[in-house]
Image (cartoon, rainbow, N blue to C red; front, side):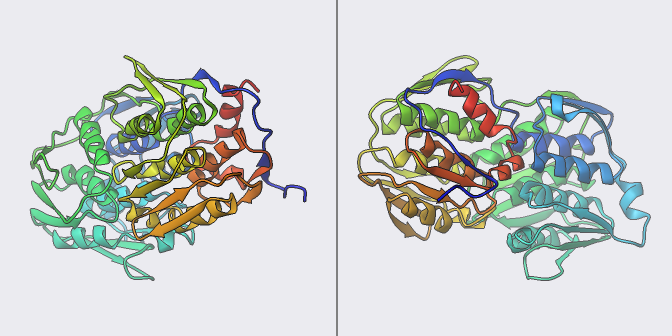
Length: 435
């Protein structure tokens, strides 16, 4: 059967992947920096900005809110002059519409910021976005006096924001669904013109993203006080963002695909611009590969992974959940079972990244046992050629495309979905492979 249109079927390599690459800027850092810059006094110059669907959504949303944005995002350089939201949102009787596509960071960060700042806004997205939870964030905002509510499905977008009165100084947010709720509250806190204490209730998932958030805020002049266990945070009343020059490091989640390519082909790949102390928690994916048998070399401004004989592991990936699909691809080439736990929140991403991942791995011939918070993968004796459904999930496409480095007949549907975070992924992968 010929491959369907709008698909990619690659020819397997006859040699290991050996090379050096610098991925584009971090999506997570880019969208945090954009938000801080938009609310900052003065001008901010950003370098290394990621040009992708998710970051374009944030840029367009901020531009619609009277943020002056100049520069060339295709070259990774933008200048922002913000702090115009009061005029835009508070002096109107109509709701300002903001369409966020399927960008979770955009809707969660902007909902918190605009709700605390005050005004009339209506945030909505595509149909999948209308299924993605935001209720815990709305509840936390309501507890301090913000006027926010879901308009259709309870606890999901679209979200309506109305003007509020005087805000309270303390709130609580649950941390078990998404760390983006807490990140949104933290970045919005300096906009409240009063001090704000935030307490996390229950388990906090994806903890490294919170440290990333506080570090980005610090670069824009706001220091967050927090307990070592990340259960309590305090932002003083005098906190305010200041324009600055800020460089964004390469995306560690994107880098995971290239490190994985080295691991499964017994090659050697160096990713430049990242190091062991980078802001992004997904750097720890290298440590996971090391536990499976790969060799990792941490340098001052680069990380190199060399593939060796791989074996399955048991691993809690709650702090690096965006690399679960990458590890699943690697697990297909390891000896023995790989069990992944701690990622129940992956069911609420662009797609259900547990059930849908399990479905595609079974099509490849793997034996997969699904649990409430993860899955176990036993590789097949022979990986089957198949057509991979991506569910419009960029990470499904990029991770399972790696199987085609070793196996013929692996077809990836809708490869264009990688535009969400990495439009040039397939070109960069081909270049790294010497094609």
